[in-house]
Picture (tube, rainbow, N blue to C red):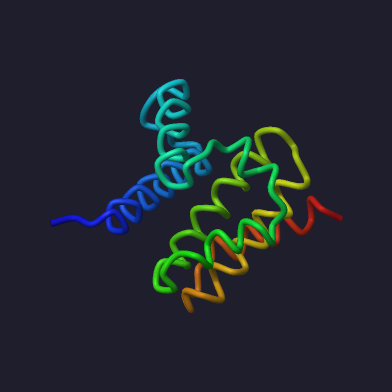
Amino acid sequence: MITDKEFTLRLIRQLTQALEKLILDKPEESLMQKELDFDTLMKDIFKFDFTTLSSKPKEEIIEIVNERQERDHKDYYEMLGNLFYFNGKQSDNKDFLDKAKTFYELYLQTSGIFALPVINRISEIKKALE
């Protein structure tokens, strides 16, 4: 039997994969369909939309993640990094890029994984924020 936590984790991974495809410019579906799925996934995961999430300071978003099970933190941070990176690049929003950098760094810390694409994105974000 799938629990709510397992279901939410599955949704997080699904959103992370969809964002990776968009970041790599390899969308499989129309962007309109992605946006619809994106909004639905955001509400299923966080109980509110991206606009609400993005208006929160980094510290408050980190608190939201800290309320979840510790073993799931890396998945949340990777997804949040992708989320803010993609939206920050689309809208040229430095606040979103700064949040992406923070969440990517937290992802690397919590996962213990050497993820070169993430490290490269952090470097790219640092240059954009200078």
